Image (tube, rainbow, N blue to C red; front, side):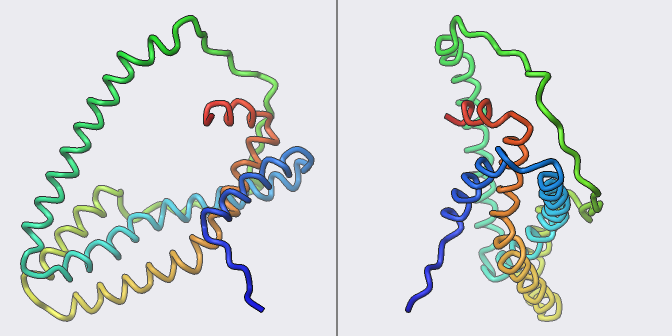
Length: 201
């Protein structure tokens, strides 16, 4: 008999539904346990993201080979071009569409009756570098490895990529639904779920 295996997206949807449902009857102790987990997992994500960028991007650029510099330049131009376009498009929507769409509406005040839950403890995991530093390092290292054709650094980069892939596959992806469950549990228990879902809708 085949075992039913759910993908990440169905797990996330189930986690959102369970988070909202459990938030209605979980007590403070249980809620704070999951908030503590979210605090630790969130710090782990902040720590891991720059390392994942370096671990995955640098070997990928090195694997491209001789044309890596040119391809990277084209990619950068396209990325920044679309970023500028998106920025101006967003500004245009905000200036032209939103004033007409929201005419006569007023911003509701924040409900002071909402409850705030704190984690029992937190573990600080400061990232070793910023995301932009990780991107630049990955580009420089990847281009350098593709030019010098050295095997020592490339072999180390490939090993580091395997470590980062294991971190994603064995830790981050399996725990992500639980993290999302904790987020929606928190906003439900603190009385903010209807306003948040209203914004989503």
